[in-house]
Image (tube, rainbow, N blue to C red; front, side, top):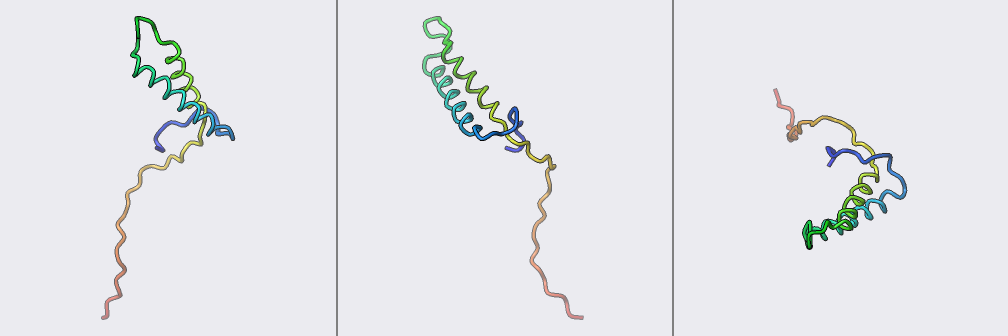
Length: 87
């Protein structure tokens, strides 16, 4: 998830509500397209397309802090501590 691009702008107090509204709107628009098809009766489903576009825009505008860009680090196995050898 840290590799995903950040949202536009800084996060605000209303960001979770905007994210929820954007996801709900996107799901509604995409569900309508999946149920009715892209051109039911030969007409463009403008409400479904507008809902999906508005949901995508709202989701992008929620903003989030960019993750720290630390490169991938190798994990080293933990070795059990061994008692010192007697000489």
